[in-house]
Image (cartoon, rainbow, N blue to C red; front, side, top):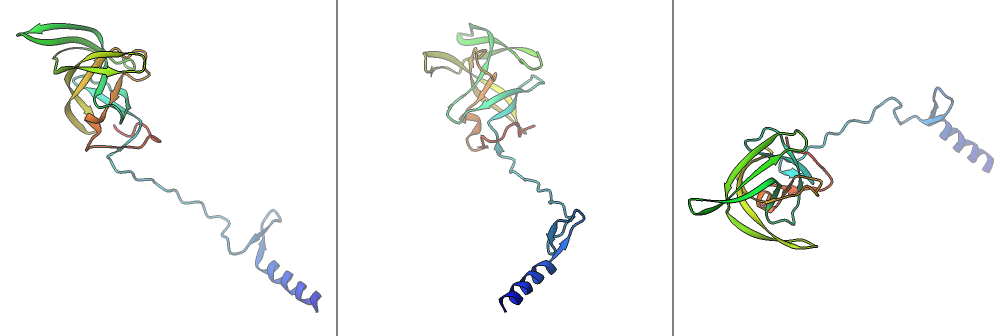
Length: 178
């Protein structure tokens, strides 16, 4: 009796399966030729990554910038920083050179204020100026501290003065903006 029960179970399981072309037993209920559907991830426009392009207007080529939610103010690498006075007010002249495209532009800007920057090895004072930028689809006038950032991997640092109220940062992604 046990033999017939075992034989019946074996026949049921064999009949539930079909033989594939290579002789392997494949369950009959699983389609053999269906492809896995492609899933497109749709992300809201305000979610950006850890590294994004920014345009320092009127320059035509973008800089790759590190997005730093811990920085209050954004910062840009400059060259030939010179202080001078215009109409009794403090100004700076400086040059920005895009390391990727070699595009250069010379700026003259009034100093909004000087800020203390705390770094691990030292404290320094940097001038802060208003810059016209394009970040994503938005053009804005925002404050940037000017620094000689040649030791850093990215020429610009995007701080909370650009991010707050506009963007959410996902550090697992990069280059989401055009």
